[in-house]
Image 1 (tube, rainbow, N blue to C red):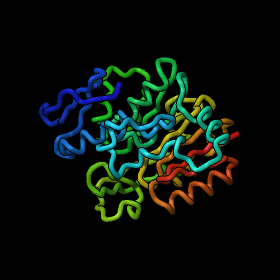
Image 2: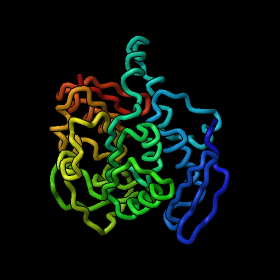
Image 3: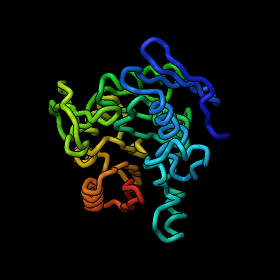
Length: 273
């Protein structure tokens, strides 16, 4: 049954939207207008970037104009036998441990939590405090128990970095990938993904999949996860968006022994072993 918003409105400082499957999502009113909030729900939850083996329901297409959700395993320009193999390997399965740098408000996180089920785990690492507060609010409102929320910046080393914004949800440690942007005036202490997982007692050998949507910081994050990248059968789904970032990520992962495929909208699919 296609996801639909059946009620929406304002609660104090927050927009809310209630869905026909019982989910409810919040966004901070001052940062998000009602139309973009609705679009984000359809783009990140109802037709998540990580539902890579599903056709997009026609009901969602009007909301997804210009989004990169068309980039699925189904649309990869590869031999049909390879595509069948990738459709067996890449979809996120029940019981998996998924690491998600860049969860934003948690719309995609909650979809990932549904995909891995009660026996799985999602580690959602959000650098921006304001986004993190909404992430927590959405996890609590939907009684999500299988997500570990982490408020830290992910980078290739421990460092204090300025955060940049192009408005809306587009924020990054890498300003040139945002186009016209401003420094937000706050510095965020970063750490490597390997260190963060160790600190939160998530053994890297348990991790099945890493998904990223982090506005151009992908190469630096990859540099900070050597232990994780050495794991056999590790899968990565990375929404690169930018040609030069895609090229850099592809070359880096291939040098680490990954088989890498690039989608029609620059999404990177990589698998080890």
